[in-house]
Length: 133
Image (cartoon, rainbow, N blue to C red; front, side, top):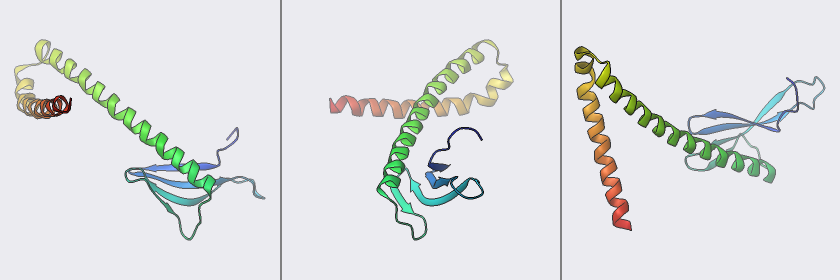
């Protein structure tokens, strides 16, 4: 590895991460990663690993990472939705121009139900927003 390594490493998991302190200042010049905490981005919980006491710097770095991770996941969510809109448009074009009767028969009911469900939720949410204003 080249360059300077960060002081902390976050092993991402579904609801957060395991937090490690990175150490290269040892006699063998090996990279050592010492787990110091487990974090949950859904509820904001930071649990020290074992009997550790986390320093203010540890907590600050962890909180900064958690906020950045939440922002990243939110951006991915909205990007996924924009991609879904693109896929709906591509699906419409496919159904209109290239799909065989057998292919349409295979997917029509599932698509209609999914689109009906989505439309119902979107209309209800839009009405709720309009009622607030």
